[in-house]
Length: 428
View 1 (tube, rainbow, N blue to C red):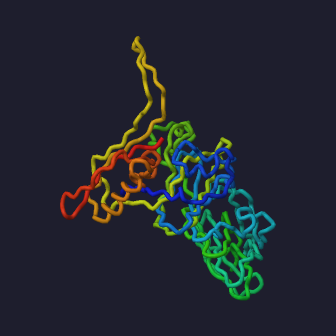
View 2: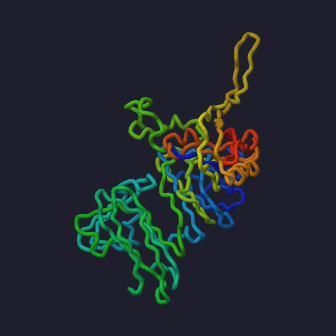
View 3: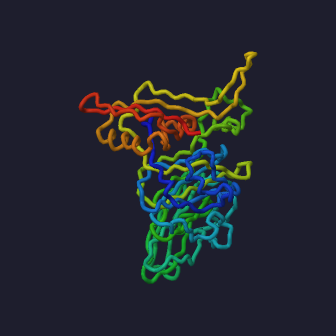
């Protein structure tokens, strides 16, 4: 069990948003509106439409990125990346996931297009099968510039472990040589090579395979070549399922259910559920530029909605909230009873409330976090709550963005600890 995670002081409001394709009447800037139902709506469900970049204007400490009130389907994936410069989003590689394309030169290798699902869930990963010694696919003449830093990344997976070289050479000379050897396993992994060109190299060639490490009879799946100038992407979440498996207990599922094997929420389960997609960073990052990518290949709709984006620092207390915490739904639906005793209701959306106390805070936590949350969020601004990020299956059911219902005092029951009580009411 992980301690609770709380985030406030949302940096999205002062950021510059760009990228993707969004409907003119429901534009991307709606993510900066505190009104949750004032959504940003993509022009299609294509991945090229459902991505966007966030420029914070300056490097900020970021610990969490969340998408609220979204309509990403039960088979959707999301990826969060962060970088120091905007140049990290410019990929020099042509056809980065299509190795059948002529941009990739093949050497004793057979490429099968769309052989399996890539790390984003789409059936776009190609199979590279070695037909001889020193097999490889290569792309050349990528202009990086003299004396410039670069980064080359590739997602790789194999049904059995394979030793594979991911390497870079100078386009005109062999004076530049960078390589990493990947012992590829059965899970998708992102492998990278980072280096810099010399004064005599202005372009590079990138390879998958070669160096006698990829030989006859061996095969790997490859996806998403990424070649960037500069430091490139410094933080990469990988592709996360928006609605994780294991959310529903087995006893609530029938053999005939389409979600039987993974216990994910079905399309029907998602109706009326305003749970956020939450990614808590593996470690706090001090970066200016961020990108959110969404892959929802099997979405049967013609667009996706996102009501709000939260990008903030966050706080995980050293000692978790005490026993006795409560979660419940609230219902604001008004009702009227006629003279005959018949009740009529105007049904409204339901929301969640969470009441908890933290009874063993340090002075730093009490004043720099708990009291700061009251100062910045008050009772008007949002606070993101994840009660237990380790409880992956229940994160969609327990996590929400809400407002503090009251600003209660920070107590000092003894000289060694501080206490605080909090109640959050979901924004609907």
